[in-house]
Length: 226
Ligand SMILES: Cc1ncc(COP(=O)(O)OP(=O)(O)O)c(N)n1
Ligand SMILES: Cc1nc(C(=O)O)sc1CCOP(=O)(O)O
Ligand SMILES: [Mg+2]
Image (cartoon, rainbow, N blue to C red; front, top):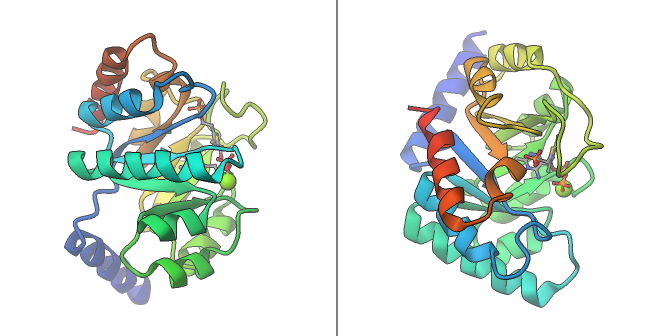
């Protein structure tokens, strides 16, 4: 128990020292949803509205476009004091010197930590399994992500999680917890109350008619953490 507390304190000190702010709205882009020139203005609107983390999630194999878009998002994040996370792609994250999110089939978290260094934010998908979170933490994850908590427009087939899982995760881990999957302004407060440090959102944030609407929605999500 004493060792667990000591590890938690060291971890908190380490992250505060690095200025990491792993709490608040975690915006995730979706290439089909943000087609037609919306990616950068909508992403910037989310950052202006208060998103602390921004994940570039693009499932295409277009390496050139992916590099250009990720680089542009990295500049936006730097300007707005937010952290960029690349989904799935260690090489792209390493080229840009930014964060990374890995799922269960996206490669080794430990190898990513070794490659990217101690200071970079790396997150891991844990679905609804505390054992996956144990392993992610042991391999150096900065945060652990659970979901999907509700019906998701973006990923309807993702394994389901219940909010009770958050109580157990909060009691067991010092690392920040991300809740993902069908998160809305209506469902987010319940997740935050049960221990989610961040809510990760795609559809409710970015399925909007204008950048101003995205900004308003991001502001409303961010205010839930005040
Ligand atoms: C914050 C966050 N949590 C979970 C995921 C899902 O990752 P994964 O299971 O690898 O699925 P894809 O997003 O790659 O389809 C995520 N991206 N971000
Ligand atoms: C990318 C992703 N991963 C999930 C998981 O449960 O691991 S749910 C999900 C989609 C999240 O998008 P929306 O906010 O539109 O539901
Ligand atoms: Mg993945």
